[in-house]
Length: 350
Image 1 (cartoon, rainbow, N blue to C red):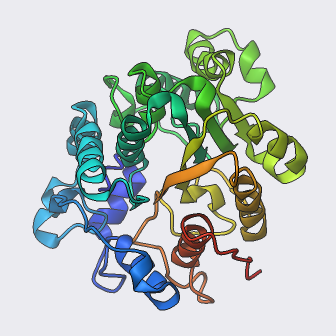
Image 2: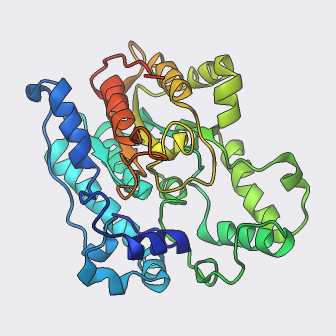
């Protein structure tokens, strides 16, 4: 399910032709790789949710007339993402548990459905939510839109357009940029059990000094998360202070954890086949070092009971980069599943 309402994503969908990949479900290539390396009696495929053509990453020609900013905005603002997340929750609860669920998805908001199923199964107080992501994904739509508008109106080098319809008259909703806030508001996730690792969007120090209400409200989101006990670990800390990251993760207090990996953690560095590339992420070696650090938290005191891989862009994943080697998004995703779901140590190929 791909409901990205931004102009560039919509233009990419409309202009996408038959010369690129034709498989738009990232589950298929990743499962194909797993089948070559993991005995099939260790895992099974429980299928994919049905998604209307206009909401798929590669839109069939007959549905392209529906690919508009207005349609995607309407879908998101009417909580369409929540409907799909609830379908995931039901699928995991009824068809997967008590086995280890591994969700492979495009839109990150679907992770919330898998987490909810596990929180209900194990008890909310017994499970932490570990998120590897370049974005915090706990920012209400109104706060994000206002911050973007501020930049568009005050920064002459801004990449944003103040007239972009996706920034105006938005309602609060459950979506890829706010789904963690939804989990917190519903009480299904205790902020003290939330660890968001690798973020690049934590406001700069000067942002906390700006008096404009739009920015003040935006940075207040991050302050509130931290004051309530959530752990936010920046990309820079992952790169420069691995010991600090390890010590922060030692504070996990629950016996179980769910791991959500947004592949844009490696955008414009380790991988190219992801939806959001506004931040340069970690390199492949850095990503697997971080994975090893998280893995060290397991063992006697913490059991990983589920995971997901999200935000893959099937329109670009796996394609040659600048005419050279193929983009490694699918391979790295499969390697991460190996490392966490099957506990096989994987080394970067760099």
